[in-house]
Image 1: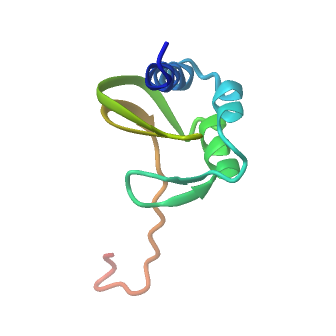
Image 2: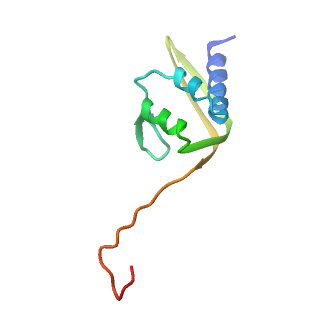
Image 3: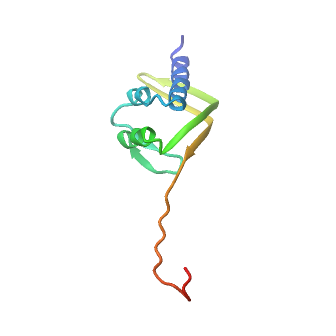
Length: 105
């Protein structure tokens, strides 16, 4: 099997592990020096990212690969693709009332 196909298969496995909650396998896949950049541009370390996944701060319920291509350069493989992610998550907003006008916010 060509190297490119192995990487494509591994990427699909990673998506499956995430939707199945197999964070042990996701964690083992990545080097401890991983820097993860979220779609929002927020940057986290591997430890922070895995902690978010394990805490179910956001849960991948479905990941559908639409396009993917791989280029191998020696020991480095670069995968570029498009996928549709269905993610359940939550947030907390904190509002502080500094000043009231006629008793209103």
